[in-house]
Length: 461
Image 1: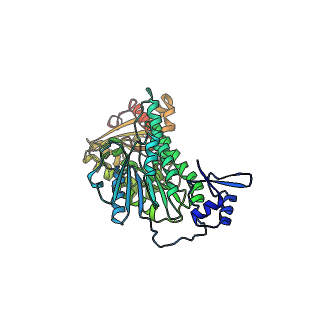
Image 2: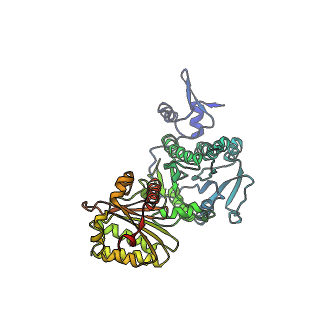
Image 3: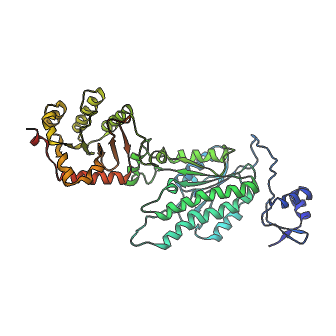
């Protein structure tokens, strides 16, 4: 490696020797070191930015954007936006992978690389001349894993692409950037939770979150470059027919998958706007993480809880399965208008083809009292809702452990939601959970309770 003297660096960068000495003493020139009284500055070191430069709304000269993973759905949409705004684009893509025809454009230079090979990445970086205004890393490596026959090579490959390639490209490309430049690393919500079938992918996304923060500490100080992460949720496109994606819709408050163009638009804004945002992660997931982080809503008052009940029942489609335990709380089965509306929604859903099973749980000694309840009589008259009965006292004697799961009762909807009642003496009426463990435990409890159940009409004779 060749080194420059302070005087040579001064001539090359066009700043005074005194200014360079100040930068050296402030550790602002990476790789520089002292031998005796002489400073040695790596020849390829970029000129440090002048931190006295104030933010300007004027457009900078550079119009060059670099995208790693340009042939992804989001990459193609981002390229469209950048070209429409007058930018030039350099796109890296895994060699031998197909390139969409819409990326063939005079303003787009496509560069094949091997994300598993350090040399091809360095060659791609060195082929870029001039200043870079923005860099986006969105290449991903994702493979499902077999926990019983784990593929360690596959795990390492995930890190080579998702982490190692990102690390190399950011560290090399920032040398071609300045105080107006921005880096966006596209990440996944898998970074914030474990994964049953893709531990390499999930953990590598978490590593990128930390890399973004680390890069911001290092390279904003050196070059003034802003470095952030766009954390994307469940995005539709070529995988939208995948069953896991379809199930994910039910856990997204917006009840749909994201569109590639929506994520591309977020990235564009992070590249060109958000001038004081640095070392941060912007989450674009339709509310998935905020809703499912604790896998449940807060405890809801009666008004909110009945509105949610009505929503679930009115949107339930033919073939859906509802499995319900009613413990006959004081705030159930009465003349409250909201309760009457809810009961009607049960029968409406059954008429639409929703498969509904309801287990009534109360003590035998209360049977004479409930015989006169008009709502229970309506259930008895229905041939579309399976209604059974379990004696509370018998359950206490035979299987009391189930009581801690049943509590005040709940409504299970397929395998994705549980609408849970809360005690009638509280200020809250219930809550909604999509916690898979809680749902699985409730469904197992329901199936055990069915083994003890008898037809409700048999005890109401």
